[in-house]
Image (cartoon, rainbow, N blue to C red; front, top):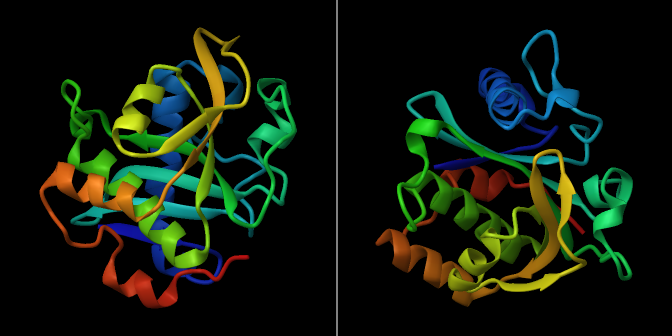
Length: 210
């Protein structure tokens, strides 16, 4: 299940957020070699982990196997403040547009081959469910261009914001990906489960946005 964590309920998820910050460090610093993010305490935390961030955790039996963070485009975020060079046209901004960042999954729970792993599917489903209930229809993503086809196959409508650029040792492109109920249906079809990805307790306590 996917749990949504905001300042309002973060005190209930202290241990899980500690696990998430350490997972981020293992994936982005140790695995992907983004050494400028390295921290002595092995907790990857940046300036965007603030009161405006919405964290999403995939938790199973008290263990965090997947994580992602959503940032409002109306506030400072990666595309506006860190990677503006990836956007060659007018930067997308609006209360219905949020940025998807720091997506990471434990190695043992990643996909094998072309199909999304259950954790990856649940994380994406969590974004779509949360977005549809919160008036959000579009996400900004900075990603490897190879993900473009996969997102289209999942029924996201994608628009590149510029050409790919080399960042570190990989190509990165910024895109917008718009979704609707067809996207959610596709994700549920692919995992063979029509149930919600968001934890029931979060349905009632999700953060109001807009």
